[in-house]
Image (cartoon, rainbow, N blue to C red):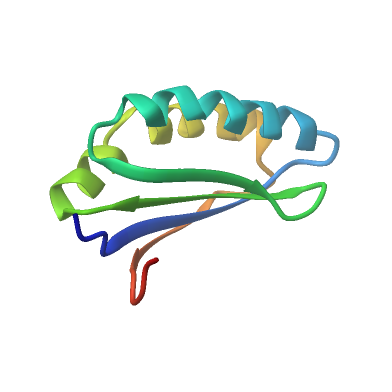
Length: 98
């Protein structure tokens, strides 16, 4: 399988909501596991308020299915309560993978 596509989402928690955002992201793992086309899915913490998600895909169809799936829908639903601003979500093309 050749993994060439990804999504990078950077998230900024509202003041005092970092732990809640972290818990939300940890719970998102179960949704990612259920997605056949998602090759890898990482949720990470940069600081007490900065978090992110990085996931990879082998096909454009798999990435599109993810974008239209449960994780982005859950994030949209929770964003008003947890996020200081709209997520910065960028599709990426992977140049090298090990």
